[in-house]
Length: 288
Image (cartoon, one colour):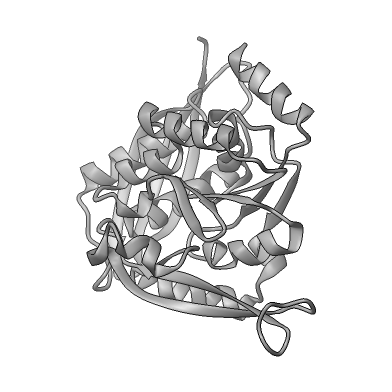
């Protein structure tokens, strides 16, 4: 009931929720400000942070977490204190549009639900905003352990100086720009999280990787029961094979292909683990 009332309040206030989605490491955070400028969006939610005018006004970054599970829980606002802080900050802000960033539509819908916001009414994919070459460059940067937070480095350095790797100023052409030559500039901060691969590929135990996979599947759809996770590792990365059971009459919240993509994106985004393939076999359909 409380959730429904919150949704109703936002709708009555005319608040519109936008989403930017794409696989891990494809440059979503890098382009967040460009999207916000284009659509007149005042607030951005990115990896556990609430951002306005290139300033962090609430939350904590998943990129600060040392462990995979902590990182993904932070990004999804699973900690009650973290969730309450960001919700209260959103309630205080005057805005009409907010942008949620995530690896899939399911992820941004889950974030919207936990923050008590309406379901995103406009969903943009990174492929609409970046060329194939730009996405490939972003992915290469991610394999080196580099992540982007869409705020100036001073916002990060004040509290986490050891966290900052570099900063970059991005220029966007705009007819009514504030800078000479009709351009506007936005600074992004490049960071290297502790959970990320900083010196090449990350190696991880089969038990730890299995726990990560179980968490991802539970986040995707808790009706799915994982019976077995097989892990193979070679020079190219990790190959996963899942055997799952589904209850009779229960439909997946999305396709098995979408679940594969979610597992791969989550493990690479928050674990710094290179996943080559995820094969899923529905081993049985069982009664409740």
